[in-house]
Image (cartoon, rainbow over all chains, first blue to last red; front, side, top):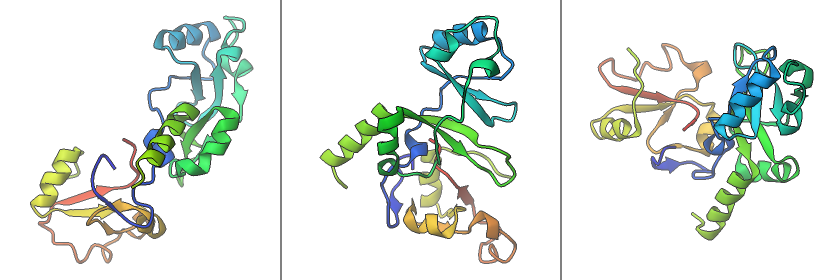
Length: 139
Length: 67
């Protein structure tokens, strides 16, 4: 936790929320695809997460989806039901899924939410890097 | 009045006697928490649960680590 000393049974094991990237662009379901594509590519990202006005995940856009008709809207082409992980999942618990799907949206289900709120995106390469580092320097 | 603080603030305030409160569920507190933190799960946070805290103490409250 930000370098502070830890206690507890699993102290030091990293969780999804700690490794997830928080700077992944988002867009709305009614946004024009051409506008989203331009904005996402300008950031250098390969993914855009589709959220509603409250930050609840509705879907995901990747290159294969956003290369469609620029005048179509996001909700017509977005991937529905992208794979997700809980923020408190340990990395060793999600790595096998990540090896199959490449990335997981980290979502938080609050008690008053009607869906998962986006908190970040977990990428296979990032997690493998951390796990390899942990294996080289076990606590 | 709650304010957001940095890691350096946390370390300084703990050294000065602040009380660190972890509001995660008990099971998650048992798994991992910042050294020295006491556990008051958010769902049990009420007058009774905080009765042992002095009104003048500085309190640092945290839940999930979002970096």
